[in-house]
Image 1 (cartoon, rainbow, N blue to C red):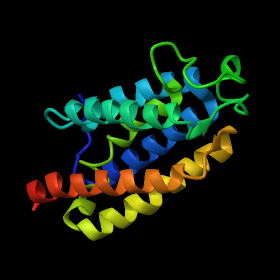
Image 2 (tube, rainbow, N blue to C red; image 1 turned 90 degrees about the vertical axis):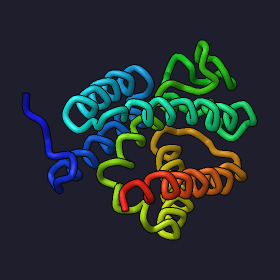
Image 3 (cartoon, helix red, strand yellow; image 1 turned 180 degrees about the horizontal axis):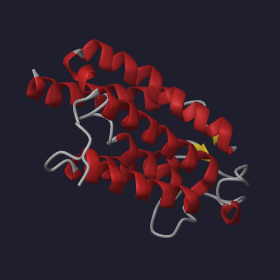
Length: 183
């Protein structure tokens, strides 16, 4: 069995590139393509880079994504009506046409994909809470903005500031939990 050194720079680069490939597959490919690519990335991540019980972090972020972005969808933060490319059968539908999920699968999958980063390529960040908060306040909303532009999703004016607050809180929580553990 070939395993990557989870602390090495090669593993960090692979980790970042895999996340980015998954992000693009979800945003540009929609739910069907995104689900296939995300499943492969998550399985490969856990096999080659996964730390003991890291699956808990992936499950926690999947749950958070369902709650947070699912709530934002239900509150009207996302308008998927213009999204003909990402999930064509759902174009024109209002919130909630995704079966049991309150949001499209491709949007939800971005959360466990992000969860592949904290213990690996972002591990250095959690010892610097102010930098983690700044990163959450900027990178989170910018990711939503870029994803919306690429996938044809309209965002409510209040959504990006709300996402900034969410990601500041998430990054500070990760700093509190992981920063102490790694120092």
